Image 1 (cartoon, rainbow, N blue to C red):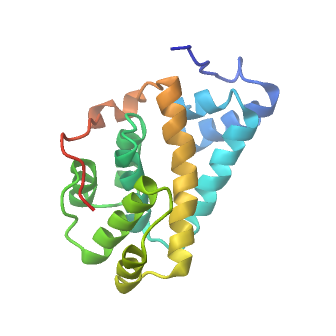
Image 2 (tube, rainbow, N blue to C red):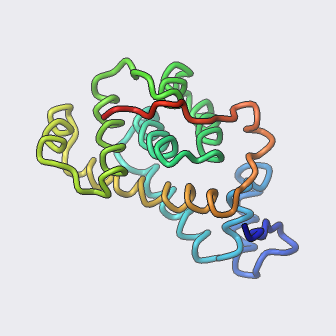
Image 3 (cartoon, rainbow, N blue to C red):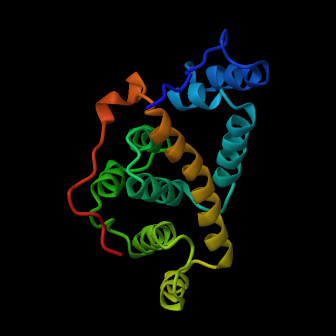
Amino acid sequence: MTDFPSHDLDTAPEASKPLLEASQKAFGRLPGLHKVLAESPQAYEGYQVLHKLFTETDFDADELTVVWQAINVENECHYCVPAHTGIAKMMKVSDDLSDALRNETPLGSDKLEALRSFTVQMVRQRGNVTDAQMKAFFDAGYGHRAVLDVILGMAQKTMSNYTNHVAQTPVDEVFQPLAWTRSEKPLEV
């Protein structure tokens, strides 16, 4: 596989340098994904805009985590699952919820389970969910806006998951203790 560049403030394209500076300031380090995305200032900025917008939806911290991790696990992203486990800890999401998402085991909440199931169905079926799947999502208390917000989360995670796949982004040292591999049997939805 072709080695993807991993940039820092010295090697990044000029248009990516302000984005890297903002990441350094926000995280106290440069996340590996950001260093790879810096090769394309537009992709990097697009990812950051999608992330910001997704965090501004009506989803609470648990729901944001469910959408992110359901997609990360479904796409088997070696980088994003540990990263979002760490992010979930920072967001005060319970370890029980994080572990269940990582291990594809029951979440302990019917509403969150409906959100995970719907998100996985959207990924697997490329948005072509059935009327019954949509009804189950609505019956759990979600509405049309939530459907669109799941799609927004999918756009963000598609960018990061696919980038990490093609670039084989190493897991950041801070997240290495949270390394993840998928269980042998994927979630049934």
